[in-house]
Image (cartoon, rainbow, N blue to C red; front, side, top):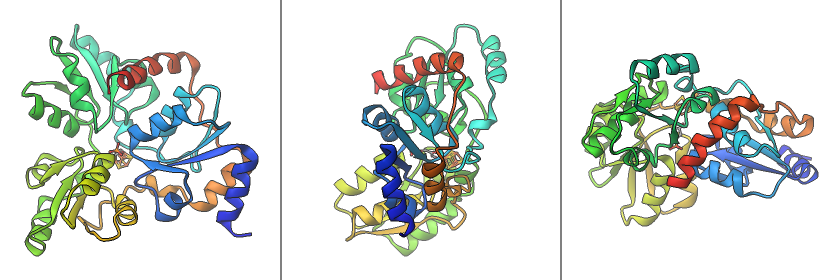
Length: 299
Ligand code: 13P
Ligand code: SF4
């Protein structure tokens, strides 16, 4: 039996579903029941009828699924698939930051640990950050951990936020020159950048979109060429969904090594062995859940 068949068999036995983020390797995306961006996967995790969720993504995403589904077993093919941006602020650092800005509301990008979410008033995703911060029109807002997503919100709403200086190392490797060169070679192509990209990259892009929004934009737009300024894994999904269109990878360095830790073998092993299980301290989970549910209610 080949690996994919073995996974399908184990999936049925365990009553499991496989969720994969848009940055996963092509073969992992193809083996999944659902692929999507962070928000789509978080929503999906609450809507599915399954005993087990295999979350192919990074740790904070699986942790979010576990927080929203205390009655399901959430497995991660590789428990070491972390997110360096999420690790750029700890719960203790956020508590200290809050003490320096009394009265401020805290919005945390979902790329954060459960402990940081537990210290926050509301979470947000790349696709709904502006919408969430709008709800706090009359309060100062602390925004953690991504300075770039935070500055997209500032630019869109025309107001200052109290930003933490975290960033995504993968998106930081994208250079404006990468986009300008591709635009010169393909003048009709639309450049789409993820809000985690630094400002000079965003400034030379045509659209600033989450990965799920990029999928929708390409589907609904009549253009046939697109420059993709985000992690390269998304291109597999875009090509699959839009066979007649052409996608240009912005840089060979736009790779998230953590997203690539999940392999088909590890998906099979985790279903076979029912581990590693993602666990969250119940006292933290209850507070983190409030911040996640506030976001889901507002988005
Ligand atoms: P999306 O929510 O846009 O899929 O982004 C998640 C992420 O980790 C981007 O680096
Ligand atoms: Fe974290 Fe960046 Fe990887 Fe997304 S691409 S998981 S933000 S390191």
